[in-house]
Image 1: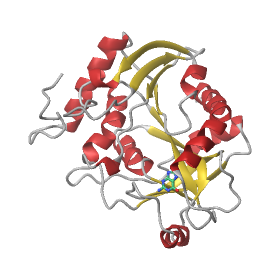
Image 2 (image 1 turned 90 degrees about the vertical axis):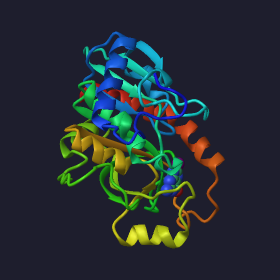
Image 3 (image 1 turned 180 degrees about the horizontal axis):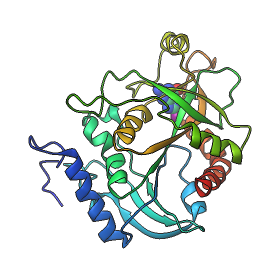
Image 4 (image 1 turned 135 degrees about the vertical axis):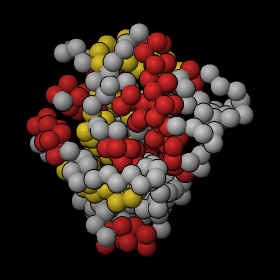
Length: 277
Ligand code: 8IG
């Protein structure tokens, strides 16, 4: 636990990987599960997947885990769950994402990913709700992330840490996902800072530079996951077509509704993919 003024990742002498190791110890103690094989971050629209993945062994409030709680009361930060699949794999389900646009710095954004690696997870499954740049995509459609463009101008890596990002979103894992659903399309995820959605001109820029999906979360997490040695699988739920691609203004309510409509279908898909990993 921590006092209410300093966050463990904000201390001048903080070592992010040591804080993550402490968080992993907390998770082992609180869940009674000393090792996880796969970690899964649930983004908007994907929340129902957890129940379908297997038997929930333990659910813990993220506030009980080092580095997940906030320095002051700022609403809830969600839960962490340990789930055992039918084949006996332990899946750490992270329902507590910190977004870059919250402004607490990139260390806090990727703390859950580093913690997942510290619990032993070798595969990081990152899911999100996002905007679609391809006109042929429909709200409610899940797509695989094939690569990303990081437009945050930031990095979770500190110092001269040169990390290769070739095949960041592992083709091996995308192929497994497509063996479950051969109709899955894929595209390049473009991370903007947010929290505003893009202008139509920014969406055209994303398209011109090779982006197909626009979002606010996953690229920074994927970089940290690769640094931590994990294999990464990324899914976007297209909740809306990006600004200017769809002719009507974007509304958060619409985004939430598309997510709710799609939730049962994509959750079942995700559960089947995880069992196949
Ligand atoms: I849900 O259109 C969702 N998240 N950047 N743009 C960006 N993030 C998003 C969008 C979108 N829809």
